[in-house]
Amino acid sequence: MNTKQLQEGIREINLNYLMLAQQMIKKDKPAAIFRLGISQDLVEVVGDLTPTQMIKMAASNMLLCRFRFDNNLLSNLLEDYSKGRMMSQAHAAILMSAQPVEELA
Amino acid sequence: MTAKTVLGDANQVRVAIDLIEMGARLQLLQQETSLSRERLLKLYKEVKSESPSKGMLPYSTDWFMSWQANIHSSLFMDTYQFLVKNAGIDGVQALISAYRLYLDHIQGIENSEPVLSLTRAWFMIRFFKAEMLQLASCTECGGDFVTHANELDANYVCGICHPPTRAGKTKAARLAAAAQYA
View 1 (cartoon, rainbow over the protein chains, first blue to last red):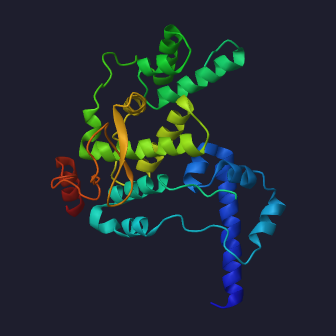
View 2 (cartoon, helix red, strand yellow; view 1 turned 180 degrees about the horizontal axis):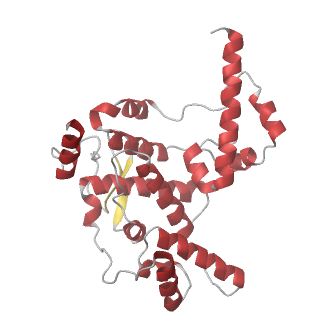
């Protein structure tokens, strides 16, 4: 994968992420806050983006979203097969809800 | 909470319909909406096309302590508290949103069914307000789990980190496994 492909991939993910996030926010705000793990202010900002703004934002070489779990959680998610799907999924959700949301500084 | 205006009344009916669809008992509806008992009864019959079940509500804090129930109720309670803290909603709105998220979550996993009913979820919130139940952090994974209030839980370990020996090995699970190989 060369740099150009890499940057294209990043832009695609950015646009997908922003579009999905906006759809979730328009459908059900509290649920979107829970699922995205971002604060109310940030939800307002993303929810109000126009398509042009979204494309401009997505056209960056940096990923706009990042991992929202620490090592503990990650190891739990990976332990899927040893404990059964139901348990590891529920566990992941329980641990994630204990995490702080991403906020605007 | 008041339904003095037409809009307010419509809102209350909307909330009541949501609650009935999620399986609320009549007592819950009476507490959480300002509609009269007669109207709620009528609404219930229209939505579910059957009479609401009668009798006592499941009133016990011990139910939340058994292994599977505890994980489900912890999942719901963590979602609920997350919404109250981060999404700026409260009361019955938070109950509806959190319960819907809980159902979505359980339905997204194969071979699992919701264990916690809406009425029990509502009771749990009341138990928390009455300080009969509380959340304790697991010392191994750091997640918050439902426990009795004032329990000695300095070294609390949750049911997922240390499942009881026979946890999840029910007759239903055995039958499902057998059906898979057959």
